[in-house]
Amino acid sequence: MWITAVALEFVAFLLGGINFITTAMNSRAPGMKMWDIPMVVWMIVIASILFMLSVGPLLAGGIMMLFDQNLGTAFFDPDRGGDPILWQHLFWFFGHPEVYVVLLPAVGIVAEIITVFARKKLFGYKTVLYTAIGTGVLSFTVWAHHQFIAGIDPRMANVFTVTTLLISVPIAEMMFVYIATLYGGSITLTTPMLWALSFIFEFLIGGITGIFLGASGNDIYMHDTYFVLAHFHYTFYPIAIIGTYAGFTYWFPKMFGRMMNDKLGKLHFWLTIIPFNTIFLPLFVLGAAGHHRRIFDYRNFPELSYPWMWDLQALATYSLIVMLLAQVIFFYNVITSWMSGPVAPKNPWNANTLEWTATSPPPHGNWPEGLPTVYRGPYEYSHPDRKSSDYWPQNEPA
Amino acid sequence: MAESIRVEHAAHHDDHHGHHEMSFTEKYVFPLDHKMIAMQYMFTGMFMALIGGYFAYAFRWQIAFPGTEAPLWGQVSPADYNSLVTNHGSIMIFWVAMPVLIAAFGNYLIPLMIGADDMVFPKLNRLSYQIFLLSAIIILASFFVEGGAFGGAWTAYPRSRPRRSTA
Image 1 (tube, one colour):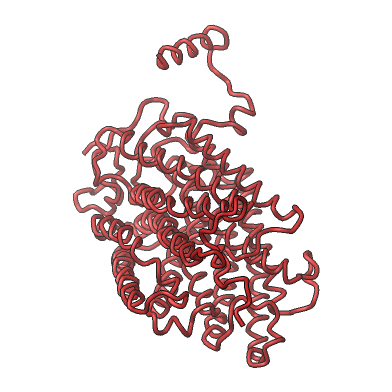
Image 2: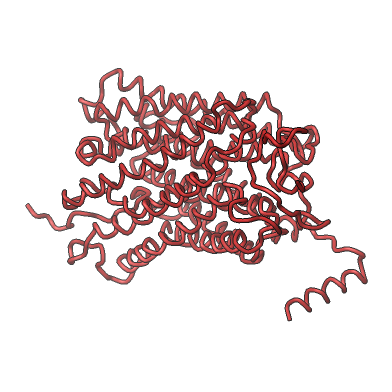
């Protein structure tokens, strides 16, 4: 059932992906050139391409696994000459690009938010775009760093160590571009901006701990400990949870035509981000102390049962409970703001991109009176030629 | 051909109703509008995130306070523990991160940000959500079948050692 569910899910996203790519390439508004496409759209398109290229091997592997279980083949069965490592290769050939499939949209969302709330042009539009494509290409060459102790040739492990450390270069470049965008901007700390800034901060922790794990020598010690687990959650939590909240709070006025309560939003932010760090920072310590991550009951392992370890484990669990309870604030905020929040204007954040020229929420067909025409790039904030305001919507004639 | 049908269809409605008012089912259950499909993905994803978070809570309780009953879950057995961890990982990646970040934001933002009236293939878009929903139902249903949910970690590695004893 797990494989069936995963396979169906992939079919769904293959259909979605082809739709995204075709739409972004063919249905752009008149005047929108390649370099005028907002970054988040580029990122989703690149992510869809990565997904479509990487999912094939895993689907094939999944079908081979089903054959093994139901039809008596032995692709992965070592008893009958199969190779279980083959599954690991097929899985991670998908699994590693998958990380970048979900990372890139989140990075794109953050790019939209920080330019709006720092009132600055994105520092190096093409740099971000090219590094995203470079990351995409590199992401297909790093998969075996998940398998350093799975019995692969140590010489191959060296190669994958190099490619793994290499992939942190474009991502670091992206983070530098974002920091340079923030530098000297007039920053407004709204709820979406807080989420976007925390994304940069938390993801940097995830990225830096990844460098330790990417080095094969160190990974032999760290493998399957809580250090890996904490590293993973410091990358995926910013992507999946922080990225979602950033995007959701930023586009909420457009989606539902109401403004969100900023005070509740910030309360929810702090009650989510502080427990998040107190869950996973202790796990770095426990991992470095040798806690293996797949153990059901640590009482069976005296060397992993010191009182301070139990305290840290309890701290992580209590923090998780606090964090889950804090989500009640979020849903309360969404429902009350949706029902009775102040009505949102067309462009509450004074942003440039086209979605803010439609009504909030946009009707079916988005622009019933005719599609907008594009005259310039998406990030012309505080432009020196523009005296009247600090933003310059993409659809406004010069 | 398709174009002429659409025009006739529109003309038909113009004759009778003035403009086409969508029923509740058409608008919210089987929508073609990219924004509504995005909202379906978004809220399905958020619902799955809550389930994934609940799983995390149950097995974190077992790790920190082994052998005691987790409130709102009960005793976590070793088999429970495995399937909770496995499905926490699978759900958070395949049923939360993917649908929300790619499908929901992609569906919502791409047409609006590039100035298009909708996706190129709206029906394909709707089908994509329906298949996704089916997959979400299957993964949740796997908790209620005999033998319990899959517990071999989200990477689903096959057994790497021969079953025969080599000693």
